[in-house]
Length: 106
Image (cartoon, rainbow, N blue to C red; front, side, top):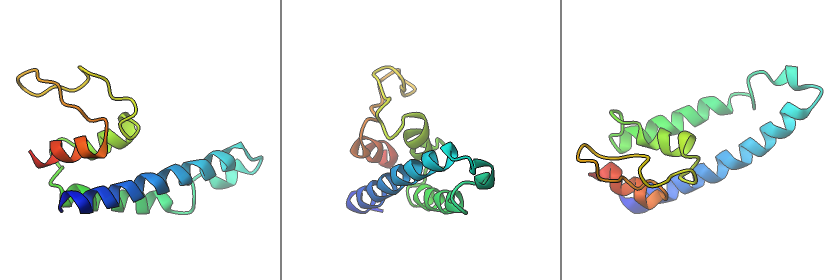
């Protein structure tokens, strides 16, 4: 997958994920929240599938950088210097989709 394709797909994924989270937050505040115990009727299954496809396309099975960037770094917003380093102690920047792509193609 080239950089343009990766950026396009991951940008759309981030947009959809944020919108889904808004809806889920409303649902979980509802008095009917017990009826939504599996979230938005299988959306999580589609999320997992999309992430698996991106991981396969970018050969990201060993380090799970895509998952880390999305969930742990909250789309790069939580990244700070010194959080992630390579084997030589050099900082690995994962703040943007571009940073993530550069790391994945190494």
